[in-house]
Amino acid sequence: MTGILRNTSLFCIAIVVAFSCKKNTDNTSTLQPATVPLNQLFDNLRSTPQTFTVTAGRDTVVFGSQGTMLHFYPNSFKNASGAIITSGSIDLKLVEMYKPGDMIRNRATTMQGKNLLTSGGQIDLRATINGQKVYANKYGIGYFQNNASATPMMELFYGNVNNVDSVVNWEAKDTTLERDIAWLGDMNGRNYITTAYGRPWMGYVFDSASDLEYTNCDAFYYSDSPKVSVTAIMPDATFTPENTQVYLVLPTINCAMSTVQSTSSYNFGTARYNASEKAINMINEGQTNIVPSGMKYILIVIANKSGQYYYSKQSGDAIPHNGLKLKATMTPDSKDNVLAMLSAM
Image (cartoon, rainbow, N blue to C red; front, side):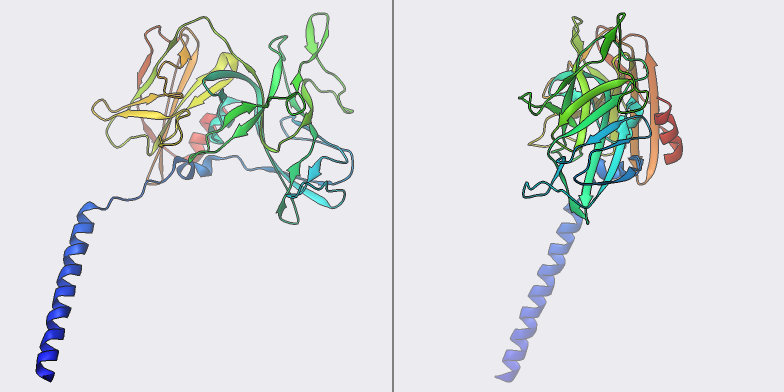
């Protein structure tokens, strides 16, 4: 009997081992490496935040290095429960994004749904107290302008990053209590503000911002020109929307458009890939015709393959009426050189 049990046990063990080996062989032939989100691939391109400390419960004004003005009132900060914070040190981290290159490196765009925005600047502002997240009640924000235009009238938009790759889409609030409209004072036909908060300054001021994190000084851009498609042709099949991002910059209106990986639940600024043509097509909310023809443009393509950056930049005076379709020559480059090229934009 003991011999029978021993033989039976050995037989069962052999079956389990054989099954396990077969299963492992099958998995080895079918498993694919997990896709790394573009947000993670390009994370080390982001700007290093500026840091400030202010005291809650006091009227305080601070300025960013690029001129952004932050005006905190005695009731500007609240905790997660909604209670106003009236004392203690508030630690701030600020990223300013006034130029398209800075927007690109920080994965921000100038789009609101299907609409193009002309930007007067963006910021990302985070606040904590003793390491705990702080929220905004009301505070003032001003976007510095070197050469402010008489038009358009700017609105304050708040950023929506509810997507896998955190390319910011902007949303204007529905009520005047949560959304300000700002314009520059007018004298002799020139818009300006001067000596704001005790120092010479020109820009757009919003006195009652209600959100921290991403905020944007924008106006909707409208054009009578027909909208056309944008396509980047990759040099080989190793460049795909899983490791490559296409950016279209419209310098005349300080606008930056971008693509992210497509997902089943997120369809803003996605990229459609045609493998046979090695083409990455920009799509916005299901539409392929997304940009007005006739505008000056800069097409930027950045890729990260196994830690190696690749970069392509092409520009033109007018987007063709039949669409923009360019071959991207992807040149391997260092992170520092990519950042230098973006900073020069």
